[in-house]
Length: 509
Image (cartoon, rainbow, N blue to C red; front, side, top):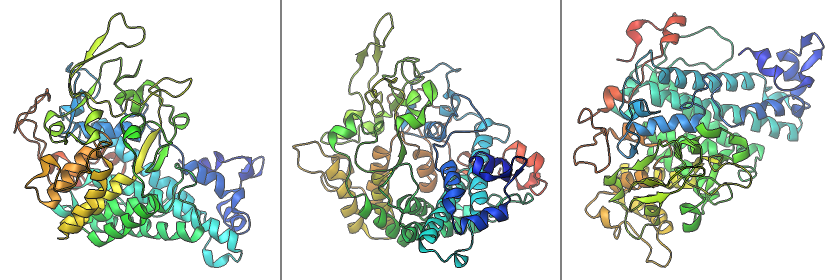
């Protein structure tokens, strides 16, 4: 996408005459006095629901759906449709997904570089702050720059998570991905992983500061990027790098802004499809997602009439081993069936039996007038911040503090009327270290939300579905899949063909 192509989508005001578009220099000059005329619509172009513009297939319609593919490549999610041709079955069986000719590396590469490219285009149009005298204009420009930096950090985080080994397990000293900080420059080779991660940290850190300086209200709109979003991206990167103090500081800023967690009713009914509940930091309502039967909830809403993960039978379940670790007084257990349950899909000739352990987590009631697979989608919420903070505390030797942080989450997830759960009373956590407690609670809390693959990679945990044996995993394959090489994608074939600075020997093995 060229710069002029990007600008053309932002309105007639970007044309200087019927035949010629406004130049970059003119935009920068205009932005010094009237940023709303050009930069506001461009910011809107960035802060939209993240759909895949390069591939339109049912397993890759948007970022949340692509993350389902990643969750399948783990221990905790079970793909219940055993047909070899079932959608996403290949991901569950971990077949070929990481090789350079597969669609998955290509999707991640194109999609995240789309973010980087849009961000760099936008950033290039923002004038230097020193040239702006109007305080109101300066605040807007600070916010706009923060939006661009946040998007770029978001894109590079996923690129590094996918295309190099974990930072703390050998990835730090290896090649990263091509680093682009300006639009429309010639292709470059793979940068050093350390440099890419440093840039992510720098971008997210500056973005959080600029959002605050610019005065953007972090609670004004859940689909706006703001300081809490930037701090969450900062915390994710810092956690990957083992920078525990930065994680703690960034998550403290988030938790202080969004301290209230979902209650039991919301969590077990509408908490993952409706946006009018507590702790949602960044997400999009159902009228913005509009992904049809192949939306995230089309895949994950087991009661969805017409959805792939509903009436079409591509059901999902929690691994029995993880289910058994959820305390009986933890209401999150109610998000999974404790016994086979009969269900009638609309228009079906006869009821079907949903199996034990099947997921009800994303089976939110339908919004008025739309199919029940058309739901809102959550990208960032407070629980993740609490878990990252607790992990950083545990991994930096602050076990007591980690447990205190984790107790906040456990108390909020205790069934109404029961004594609040703690690290010391949670039935399956007896004898665990503080870090092991955090790992277990992260797996339970964030199940199905696109984190397990990356958590397993950061924790250096194998995919192992047979020791001890799962009661409902229906594919075992090899007894283990190790982080190296199975958690690192190869550079896609197209990039190798068209980027002369990445030689065959630069490929991930």
